[in-house]
Image 1 (tube, rainbow, N blue to C red):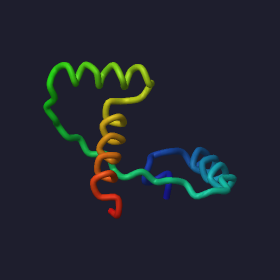
Image 2: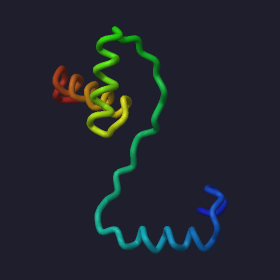
Image 3: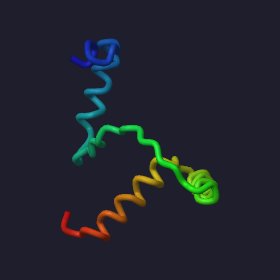
Image 4: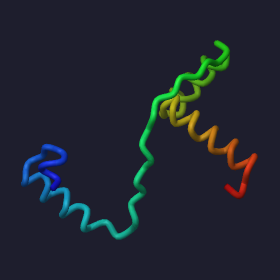
Length: 78
């Protein structure tokens, strides 16, 4: 199934399966990522880029964490 779906060799698929069997905890499966376009004032966009670069992350990750924090703050019960 791995070889067909992802175009990897049978040997590589076997290695992935062996490695997966050694994991002793649940593995988080991330939600699909979808692109969005937002418009920000230039000064905020500059600060956002600097923050992302300074923390070694992406703009998308910074924005996603900020949005989740805002949503949880405004509606803590989901």
